[in-house]
Amino acid sequence: MQRELTATASKIEELRGESQEHELVANTLKPLDPNRKCFRLIGSVLVERTVEEVVPAITSNQAQIDKLVGQLEKQFEHKEKELAAFQTKYKIRIKDEAGIDEPEPKGASSSSSQGVLVSKK
Image (cartoon, rainbow, N blue to C red; front, side, top):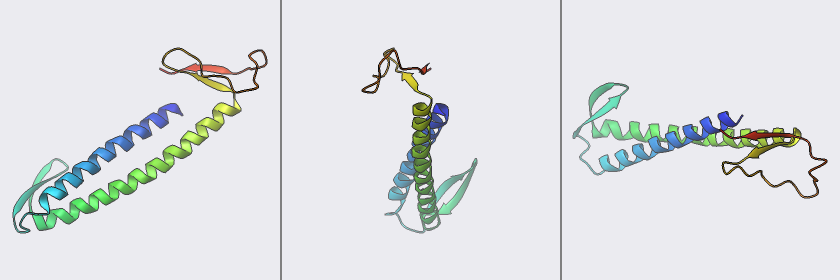
């Protein structure tokens, strides 16, 4: 579950970066003459187009990327809640990078606490 969360978080950051790149390109092209030539990389093919054709496509792609980021964020939050519920149900505590256990919840004594300790890799 933690690997899924990490993978989802990396994909969200990657897509946010792509969205920012799309925004930067769109902002650069908007003030230019609509009939000016520009080149667009589609897959691995460089295609010659006009600014008038490229700006709407870039804006549309950016909107789709932003929508996907929103969906992934909702999925991330759901998985995060699911992981927390799983950890609570099976009394799993995560050992942090410094090697110190997370504090026990109030009212829980160490003698009555049974669970699993998992270290992050």
